[in-house]
Length: 386
Image (spheres, one colour):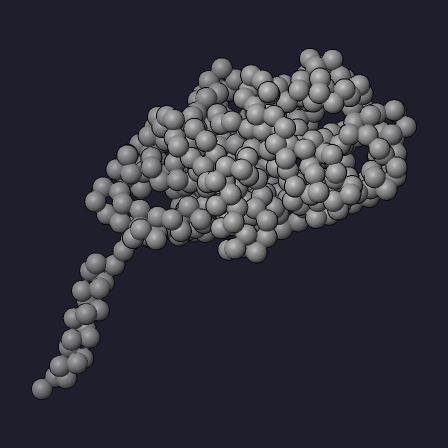
């Protein structure tokens, strides 16, 4: 006679297997180490927290099925060759159809031929205009770039702060070179020329010679846009140590906690910075607290964008009724209007600039750094800051 407990256990296993929840794998990639780690982690953690939300409700429901979402993250080290390795692993080994990331222009341009051919949807941070286009129907950008934000905020800074001559240090890569073009146009339009520029390789640590040359040209402000968070902190720290007393501003890329951590409160006092969010917003405050509790570090300002973007992707899957047909999911994603995210009311735009409405449109802010914290000074749209 067979043991009834063995039979019952076998039946339970069989029943559990028959009703096992399916897994939906989502990729995340960015620089998870090095100077840009805060941004790469912002991408990864935003995706993870969104996945945690739906998993806490029993999974993502699509066409009557519930899926447990699993985020698989890889470090692309902000390098094109590493990004290609990571994306090949995600697509061909992990079998993902959706990737949150990557970060930089060089990494996005390196993986785009692979993701587009494989019909894999990406949510990129890349600032290059080449990241979006009719020839890249599976690429979306859920963050504002310098192209969208620079004109309005630089006009406000020039008028409000009275600066006359600006200098800047830029990484010598696709991202840095694109930002130079955008900033030169914006500063010229504001009547405050970007008069001095220095280019450097991203792994450089000693900025003193570059800063000395900028200061010798009589600049009264230094622009940090385009630089990774830790690198920006080094620039601020070394500029103040060299005796620079002028305004330091950052017209793109949230990085204030990381800059303050490296440079200190005294060196960063009075900085004017682009901020994608207002910490007085209860939804953002709750997210920041959750981020701090879970990851034991201050939230990077990019993270809420990728949290919202991941939730929008989940909504698109549910509306399309599929987690595999990325043509249907992409169409549903692009059709989302007035999404009530924690960043504010979110829409897609970009047709005029990029030939396709895959560029996010959300409010943003200008803040002054006081005692290491951001204090909102202006509310902005792409048209103006007030």
